[in-house]
Image (cartoon, rainbow, N blue to C red; front, side):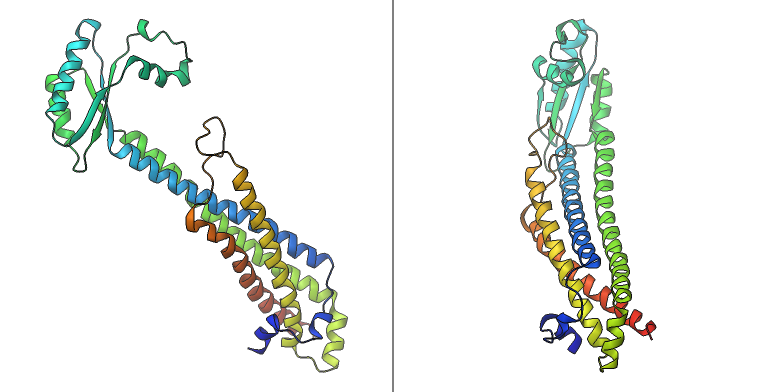
Length: 297
């Protein structure tokens, strides 16, 4: 308890034990800043992937497309028959026949804006929106097969599932990256603590001669590293937040890395990350320093 108290209310001589600058101090500060930047960015990426997965799931789950492919002479009659079947199907909230301009817009990313759609044997596309109760897909397919054999119902399942799985893989990789970064922080603090204690071995020997305990000596090093890591992680979290602000908005379809941002309570991670660094650094440095001090006999 006394050693924890010394972290926040140190003895007036404890700050004079450990040098305030040096390689280990700079390493702790800048490594913490870099790791905090990566964590905040990974958190934003994970939340963005989760939002994207839910968006894809919601937008595709309640929609379907009916494609009517038939010879030109029969295309109009087959389309009318398909519309009649849809109008009699329970569970369908709305449906509409896509215009030629809308079909051309769908083909534009692949064939360009000047695709001669009127000269191509294009199928008719009908957009379907189901209500909250949904419709019987199997029954609808059977009716279409009997009355409109040229119609094919696509409920987007084959597109929705791979997209959602890909988004959740990104979500998982983001949190895995966060775990790896914290593991690196633990390893870094262990090495830094060992280096600092080894480089100050003579100081430690003198302190022991005058009666200083290992807990007292460890508190000096722990306080130094914990606060350096805390301030470094604050800087890294701030830079990460500025980077997220500079990323293009989600509406910008011509840019990459869109939609990676924090929303609402997600911004609290800018506080959670520095506090986590402080606690993790404190525990790691304390355990490491006491273990190393026992070996320095």
